[in-house]
Length: 148
Image 1: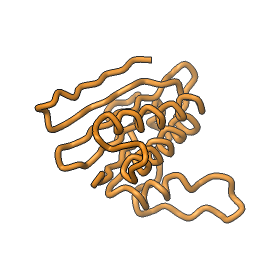
Image 2: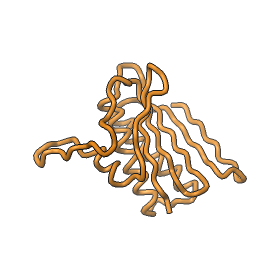
Image 3: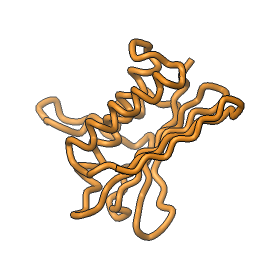
Image 4: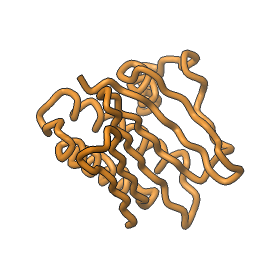
């Protein structure tokens, strides 16, 4: 597990990044670590901002572990808190060939379906979201949420 934390007091932007195993356990750990980091940055565990961000991380990390998994490869979680209290959440996995639908094009899951609601939650709770492929080997699904 590699951790990269940068949050000097005078810096208006705070960053946190970590690589985690592409498993259910890794996704669960991503949620816990994100919640802990937000608590350290001033958004307490019991705040709505912390709970919302933790839910968004949980959904994106679960998708990386389920749909973006490739044997022997991890996923990366990156949090960027800007001075205007906007949090950008990025989850990068090794499956650029498995992109999510475009924002605004999601279809509701059937009532009896056991999955298919995660990105609907992301779309409902985040101000913006999307997916990018920065290189031929990875894709990043990201979202931004206002923490105020």
